[in-house]
Image (spheres, rainbow, N blue to C red):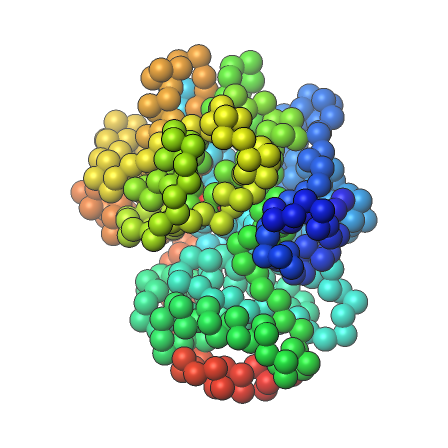
Length: 433
Ligand SMILES: *Cc1c(COP(=O)(O)O)cnc(C)c1O
C-alpha cells in the first residue's frame, strides 16, 4: 500500500519510505491511500483470540502487501507483548488500560512497533542505524524502551539537564545496551535544534545513517488502532452502541481510533477529551481552528496548542467540518475538574484515574448521562503512579509504586554530558562511526 502526504494527495511513497523518512518531503504527514476494511469473519471470531493475534490480523490488512506474512507475524507478536485490559469502572463505563507496557504509558505500543518495523526495513543495511530523539520527558522513555535490545539500531536521546522529572530521567538513563542518554546543558529547544542540525549536516550524514523516531511516524500511528479492536473484543455485550473517549494532546491516539472505525470497528461516537488546551474541541463546536501556545496543566502530556495530527483528521474527512463534528464531540476540563474527578471516582468506585484518563472519564460520563443506551469506553493512557504527586494529593494517601517503575528507580543513571554547542554534539556523533 502507498502513503500520501496530507499536503498533497498526489505525493505518494511506499511504506518503507514513509517509515524511514517520517515526514513527507513537503513536510506533510503520511496517510494510507486506502483504509482497508476487515472481513466480517474477523469480528465473528475475535472473542476467541488474544490481543497479539487481533493485532496481527489488523496488521495483515494494513501492511500485508509490504511485509511478508511470516515476518509481519514475528514483529507483531514481539511488539505486542502485554495486554490492554478493559476494566469496568461503574455501570456502563469501562476503562481501556493502555499502561501495562514497559514505561506504563500507551506510547509503548507505537514505539515498540515502530522499532521493529524500522529493524525490518533496514535489515540488509551494512551500517548501524542511529536514531536521534529529543525529549522533554515521556516520549524519550517510550522510544528508548521500545528500541531497547533491537539489533542494528542505536538510539541517542537528548534531554535538557534538570528539566525532566526524576522518574522520567530514570526511565531512559538506566537502560544501557543500545540506548545512550545525552544530558544537554540547555533547554528542550536546544535539544531539538541539535537534532535538526545533525540531520542536515553533510559530514555526519556521510559517515552515519540517521533517522528520527518522532511521534508522527506512520509506524507509530497505525499500530495504535490495534487496541481499539482489542477493547471491542473484550466487550461482553456487543449489541449496544459504543462511545469511545480519548484523552488527546497531539491527537495521534484519536486518529488511530478513527482509522479503526473506518476499518469496520463499530463505534457510534468518538469523544476528544482535552485539558484547557482546547483548540480541537473549540474547532468542533465553532468550525474555526486557532492554534496557540500551550498552557501548562497537571495532564501535561496533553499540553499541546497546535496538535500535529489534526492535519490527518482533516485529511480523513476531506476537510469537512460538518462530517468531523458528526463523528467527534469535544470536551475540555480545568485542572480543578481533573483533580475532583480523580478524588470522586476513587471514593465512589475505588478506581484510580491518572490526570489524562480523568479528562476522558469525565467526558464519557457526561455523554452517557444524555445517552444512556450507549456503552462508554475511556482510554487510560498512563498508570496513575506516573503522576503520583497529583494523584496522592487527590486521594489523600500514598500508594505503592508498581514494580516496573520501582525497577527503574533502583538502577544507576548513566548519561553523557554535552553542551548546547553543535560542534560538541557533532564530535560525539562522528565518534560513533
Ligand atoms: C502522549 C499522551 C497523551 C496524548 O496522546 P496524543 O496521541 O498525543 O493525543 C495522552 N496521555 C498520555 C499519558 C500521554 O503520554
